[in-house]
Image (cartoon, rainbow, N blue to C red; front, side, top):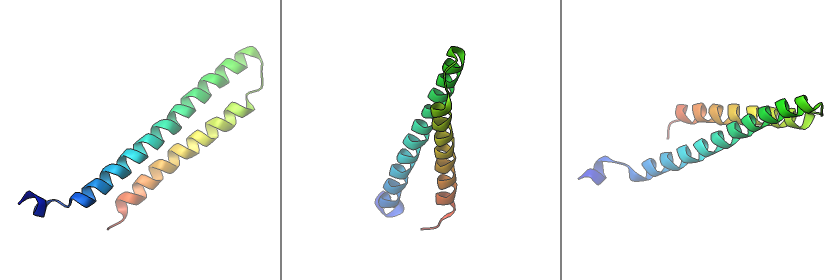
Length: 78
C-alpha cells in the first residue's frame, strides 16, 4: 500500500543529490574558512597571500555554484 503512494526511486534520487550537494558545499566553505585563516596568518608574517586569496576566490565561486545549482534543480520538474 505504501509503496504505491511513495515513489522510492525519486526519493532516492533526491537523497543522493542532496547528500552530494551538501558535501560539496561543506568542502568549498571549509576551504574558504581555511584560506581566510591562512591569509591572516601570512599577513602577520609579512608573506605573500596571493595563493590563499586565489583559494578563497575558488571557494567562494564553488559555494555560490553549489547554491545556484540547488536553486536550479529545485525549479526543474521531472
